Image (cartoon, rainbow, N blue to C red; front, side, top):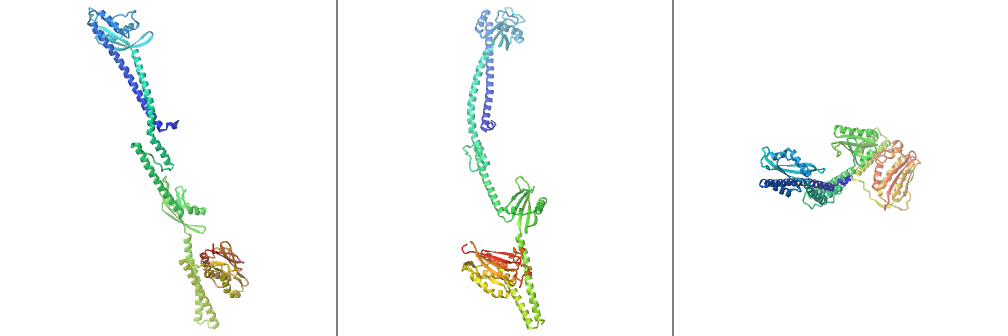
Length: 588
C-alpha cells in the first residue's frame, strides 16, 4: 500500500482530486450560503413590499375595515398578517396559535415598539413554538397612520405586521443545495477520471526517466529517452540523455585509464604497493605480491617503520633490503589523497637491484681475479728472467729449465688473454655458432687422437670416441671441440694415475646427449651451482698441474646455450664428476 502511495501518478492524481474537491466544497458552501441568504433577503423584501402596500391601502381608503379584510384574504395563507392599532392590543385565544404567539412576541419585543412610537419598519427572525415544534419566522413590522379617529398622543402610529415561516425557504434551499452537491459529485467523478488520465500523461516521461535512471545506475548507457515535447519535462529528458552520454564517455575514459594503469602496473618489473594511512594494502601488482611472500618478520617490521616514517615526514624515503641473496631498493612516497574518501597514504616502488648488485660485484671480482691471474705468471717471468740476466743461473741445464718455465708462463698468459678477449667479444658482440648436420664420430675421434699421448703420460684410461654408427648431430664442430677440450683438460687436472676419463653418448626425443665422466677427486656440493660462473675455481688443493683461468666452464656454458642446449654437472666428492651436454636434435 505504501509503495502505491509513493507512486508519482497516484500522488499527482490525489493532489488534483484534493484540490478539485476542496474547490468544489468551498464553492458549494459559498453557493448554498449565497442562495440561502438571497432567498431569505428576497422573502424579507417581498414581505416588506406587501406590508408597505397594505399600509398605503389602509391609509388611503375610507373603509378601513374592508381594506383590512381584503388584504388579509389576499395575503394570509403562507403569509400571516397582523394589523395593530397600537401596541396595547390584547391577543385573543380564539386567534390561531401562530398569530396569538406572534402578537405576544410583538408586545414582548421592544424593537417592534419603535414601529408604533417612531414609525420605523423592523425586520427580524423570531422563533416560536407552534404545535409543539420550534419554528423560525420572518416578522416584518411596518408603520401606518393611526387607525383611531382620535389619535392617542402616546401612540402616533399603528402597525402592519407580516410574518412567514422560513420552512418553505429552507425547503427551497435544501433542494438547491442537493442539486449543487449532486453536480459537485458529478464534476468530482469527471475530474477523477480526467485527473488520472492527465497525471498519467504528465508523469509518463517522469516514469520513463526513472526507469532510465535505474538502468544508468546499473551501468546501461546505450538507451535514450524520447523527448517529443518542448516543455520542462522535454528539456529534462534531453538534459538526461546528454548527461547519460557524458557519463558513459567519462566511465569509458576512466575504465580505459584504469585498464591501462593496471596493465602498466602489472607489467612492470618493479613491485608497486599502495598503502592507506591505516597501513592497509589497497594496490599491488604481481611482482610486489611475489616479493612480499618472501619477506620474514624482521623485514616486514623494517618495511612498516619505513612506511610510518614516510607518513610522519611526508617525504620520499629510500631503503635497501637484502632478502634471500637478492637485493631490493624500496622507494616510498607520500600521497595526500590516495582514496576517494580523502584518506592519505603511501605508494611504494620495489626495485630488484640483484642484477645490478651482481654486476657491480662481478666487476670487482673481475678486476681482482684478472689481477691475481696476471700477477702470478708475471712474477714468475720477472723472477726467472732476472736470474738469467743477473747471472745467478749460469749452467746450461738451469738456464734451459728457467727458459722452459718462462715459456710455460708466457703460454699461460697468452691463454688467459685469449680467453679474456673471447669473453669480452662474447659479451660485446654475442657468440656465433654455425650449426650443421654432421656425425659426432668425427669430433670424438679427433679428441681421442688429441689426448692419446697425454693419456699415456698421465697414466689415465681415456675412452673418448664411442661409436654412434654415423648418427647425424646438429652442431658447430669447432665450438663443440672447444667445449670438449676444455672439459677433458679439466678432468685431467682432477684425476690421478690409474683414473679413467670416458665420453658416452645417448639421446631422447628432443636431445642428443654427451656424458663426459671421470673418476677423479670430484667437486664438493657447495661448488656445483657456481662452477659455470666467471673466474670461479674449485679448491686448488685437489688439483694437479697448472692453474686454470676460471673462464673455461663459463665459455662452455655460453657455447652450449648458444646451440640451444644445456650443460649440467653431477659430482660426488672423492668419486668423480660427470658433465652432461644436451644438444637439440636436427628436427626438434
